[in-house]
Length: 371
Image (tube, rainbow, N blue to C red; front, side, top):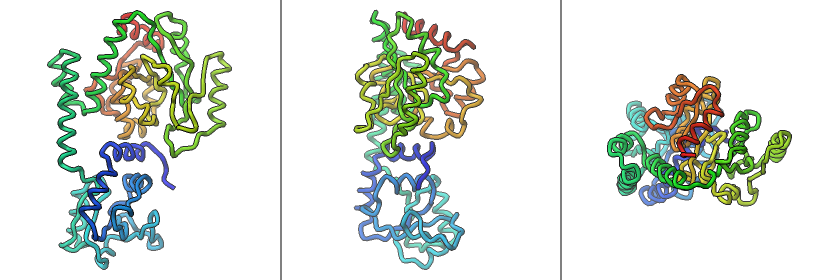
């Protein structure tokens, strides 16, 4: 059974983003009647085999990896498993590389004469030219939208070269939302998503906003730790989390719909701001990028030095935090550390506030939102 972790999630997310099912259909047409070896038994392969039925598209006769050493292990996820040297005796036409460094794999197989000259070696993720072109066009549109909204040419040019398309879109969305909030005299509606009461530090912030007339704070929404269809809800943990807030007389709801695996309340509340306790495991439907269309999104890193740096450095986590509106930290050292590990140094996301972090965040919000 595959372990669900940050790296695995990053690849699942990546495969969705490149429309891997469409890529598989293209491979099916390209390699019809060809015998295929998949090379590399890493996390990317696990994400592919767990989420896509590759045998519907390709005639895969086996998997190989230079890390295969145990002669007694002959299968991997129900496929025949071969040492690279054993490939010499096999009859196949194509090697599809599932590792990150395709050029290194091709050189390794050719240099050691593990495959015949007639065998094609190619990456399994083959993005068509038109998709690359469409992505380029989408980035131009996103950049123009940010320029039109911000009316700041210098900042627009800077973001064009430092942000990807999604990040540009979320930046423009946040600017529009900021203008809308500032032009309204209504209280700012805030939703808190909580997935881990064992490490909850935001109750103070919640209470400050709850009793401030400039904000309308909804009951804290309890969610599973991982908002993924493949992970069953731990009902005992959910009940415990609800009781945790009940003991503090804090308004709370179990917001997870078991039948649809959705958070219907997050859309029913129509919040202006969404606080993510942990943005790492958020399902696509409620990710910062998607929610940027309707709300400002933020999280707080109360103690970066004690954070899970393996998680912070994962591709999946980087994507989530790079589409947030703000990440609040309480000193410049934490800002530098957080930006370094999440690779968001040039994205104007991490905001330093003073040591009394919750009070400082409220002060920042009131000033920024003009309340």
